[in-house]
Image (cartoon, rainbow, N blue to C red; front, top):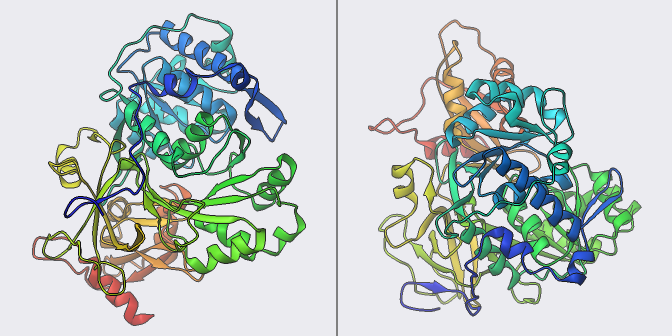
Length: 535
């Protein structure tokens, strides 16, 4: 423990270079690094060296600059995990643009909302996503010549065409601590998705912090199945692996057979996963049909992983299973279990990364909790944290920013934590309303607004409930119009038609009235109590 009322990292601070993310990742490549394999495409077996990757990034940056892209331009990126993602992401950043990463599962309407909110004037995508991408681009006024289709499509520039022009790499100038590199969208602790302003310094800092705790080496081969559009995938898979000069095997979507086959075929050593994959590794019989003995470490994040599943997976595949914690607002990693820490239970989220500070604050009184009880654990409280990886704020949302970031720079996470002797933390509950489905964020408010647009719905509320596999899923409580004949199937189909698959309402209960406070706020605790009583 550090200064009174503040928990500090047990690691010494690391130096955060005052560099752009491009210069940080690619500026120090030496001859040995340049010859190493950066990316492997399992669909073709194609390998991209660090030399080739840097050349593609520079050429794409030059092509964008020749078309007027500069500091302040916002570019949307709607793309699955393919090697070209790295070229587009870092080429755009090299040109000075800000990239807003878009969920590959989004509908045209959801893409449109994000492009409009972010102020995007360019969009990069792949041909399978073109129908929803072009519909969204047209709705916000992005012309066809500014919709780049990576693998080519008539009427649109392709990545190969732009790289082939071999334009000079632009000279750009900005302050890494102030210039926004990426605008991922997060629901934060509550509400609808908001653009999270992460600077070049935020991204550089979080990779530097992770290097001190996550034992990833140049000799490792990382299976990249968690989406790069998610900040977890962007920072911990893509950027950390590139900085460590490791090799990334890209997977556009999760399929257990392909996942296991790729590990076996490419001799992957390090896996970054979300809890549902840990469940498969622990329990699915097909795992035994593959030789995945090269895997030495599995790191889980994006949602809580229970100890029983983690230990079963680790025992079965003879690998270290570790867990971490973070938020989009913290770039994202703030805590991680180090591989050498045999005394830290895998059910915890581990230690604060270097340069991080944290508080645990009583939810009722606002008092800071510092006293460690006789059992070696503090009382529960909301986790607040501060460090060089914390966002600037939410785009064009000063009130939401003020609600989440205080005057002292502490991010109020909305998660309830305890601190243990031994310098590690556990997340024990969630004060915020967010639903986590297989690692994806779902904002109840977004689904509620959609449900209220249905002509047969008078009122609605959404909470997360556990399904038969102990995974959190959205459940809607609906007040139907009298004599409307509205059915649960009709409600679920309506939502499914308008949102990405992970946001679908999976359970519906009709009730007479939604419980609300005198101020009109939905009393979700009452709905949870109702659910618990039934269970």
